[in-house]
Length: 191
Image (tube, rainbow, N blue to C red; front, side, top):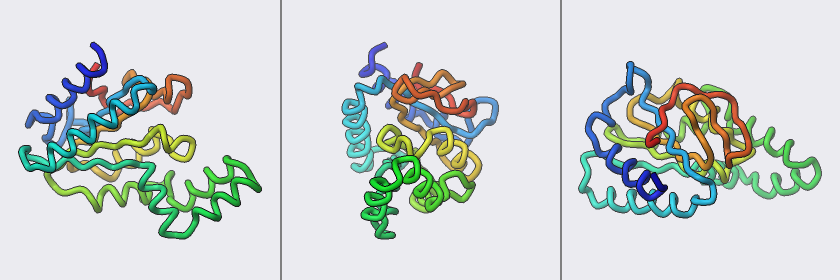
């Protein structure tokens, strides 16, 4: 099945009432990963934007909420006036130190991560959540961390993470090159 067909299948899946009930198979939290070839990023972004615009017209019986995780990080840094500090810090100390500083200030590794709080506060009751921007966030944000933190704190509606790489329901391989920690709680949305 090519990407266009998989995106069509994903669109059909999220519109099924059974998809939007509170839990997945065997009563797990309703978390899904839509993986795709990284070089198809723009095609996926286009489809997500199309689905969001279509949903905004009010034809669906749920609200599609799209969170670009990169935008959430940048907004946080801008509100705190940290952007210039990050540029200077990176020049002096390197990317690893920036990753650590941003991760700590946003509590990315904590259960009360600012990203999780933001998603919880900005998601209505009857919704489907799309998480995008995973590739743009690397190396600051690791996909398994986002899913683990959300999984512990956010269960009221289905979450679909769009992942530029491969997910085989055991491991996440970003850009088909960088192996993340194993993750077993999400299902692959379209195989």
